Length: 516
Image (cartoon, rainbow, N blue to C red):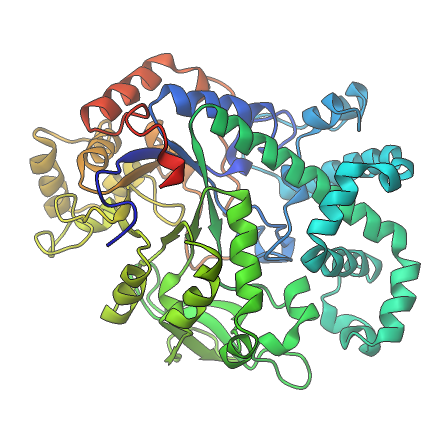
C-alpha cells in the first residue's frame, strides 16, 4: 500500500520556473518565484510542482527533458535580482540585461543576456572563491558530478559548441594526458561553470526553504533518459549502449500512442542495465538522492521503462519499428531504497502493463492519472475517470504534455466527452467553465494528491500550451502575463482555498505532510 494513501489529501500547482513573468525574458528563481510561493499558500495548496531544472540544449528545442546533465542546474533560471541582492552584480548591470516581461521566451536572446550577466558576476567573485566557505563546501559535496559537468561545458564552449564526438580523440576517450592538458587550459572556464552551479543551487535552496516556512513542499521532475551530448554519457560511456565509435546503437522512445501515431523517437541512448547492475546501480542511487535533496517529492518520468523499455534501432526514422526489452525492475529501487524510502511519484502513463503497476505498488510509489484521458468510450472503465482514480495516485487535470483544458474542450473533446463531463459536473459545461469543472473533479477525487497547471487556473486556450509531444521546436516558451498577474488574484486564491477546505485538501489539515 502506498505510503500516502491513508487519509493523505493534498493539492498543488504545476508551473515550470521558466514560465514565470520576469523582466529578464524568462522565469527565474527570484522574486517572481517567491510571489508564486505566497499565492500557493493562500490558495490552500500544499505543493508546487516544477519541470526538470537541468541545463537545456538549444539544438534540442530547449526542452527541460533534454539536458547536458542529469545533475546540474540551468543557469538561465538564475535570478539577476538575487545576484544584485547578494552583491554579485550591481543594479545597473541587471537592468541593462532586461528583456520583455511578457510574451514567449526567446531562448537565444535570454541565453546571451544571462551568460553576459553571469560572466560579470564571476569576474566579481573569482578572486574570493578560494576563501568562500559556501562555495568550497558546495564544490566538495557535489564534486562527484560537478567536476565532469564543469569540464564538459568548458570544453564544449572551447570547441565551438560541438558535441563530444567532435572533440579530439584523446579527449573523447578521456585520456589522462588530455584531461590534464585541457583541465589546465580551461581552468578558469571550469571554475566559472562551478560558480554558476553554486549560484543556481543556492537560489533553489532558498526557494525550497521559503516554501517550507509556509508549510509547503516542492515537487521536482527527473527524466529517465539523458542526452548523448551530455557530461553523463561522456564521463561514463560504458553505462550506455554505444558502439566503438561512441555513437548510440539503440535509441529511446515509445511506441504509437495517444500522442503520436508513429510513436515518439526521443533519440536518447539507452542504458546498459547490465553495467548499472554490476556496480549496484551507483549512478542511479546518486542521481535519485541528489534530486531528493533538492525537492520534497520527485516525479520520475517514464516509469514504465524501469519494468520494460522501448528500444528503437539506431538510424530508424520513427519509433514504430522498436521492440520491448526488460528493464532493471525492482533491483534498482531496492538498491536506491537501502538508504531510506524514496519520495517518488511514478509517471505511469502510456502503455501500462501489469508488471509496471506491480513495480510501482511494491515500493508504494503513487502513480499519475490525467482527467483529460478519463472521458470517451471507455469512460466507465478508465483508470483516469474521476470516480475511478484510486487513492494511491496523483491526479492532474492535464500535464505539460497535454493541451490546456480549455483547448482540450474546444479541439479534442467530442460530444460524448462533453456530455460525460457535464453529467459529472452537474450542469452545463462550456469553454468558459470546463477548466474549473475538471479542477473541482480532481480535488474531489479519491486521489491523495491533486494538481492543476497554472494555465487551467487562468482558463487559457491552446495558445498557452507548453508542449506538443512529437514536435521538436516551438515548445517550452509559454509564460505567465505580467498583466492581470495570477499571483495578485485574491479572489481566485480564496476560491481555491474554499475548494481545498470542501474537498479535504486544506493545507492546515496535515501540518506534517512533508514527513509522510
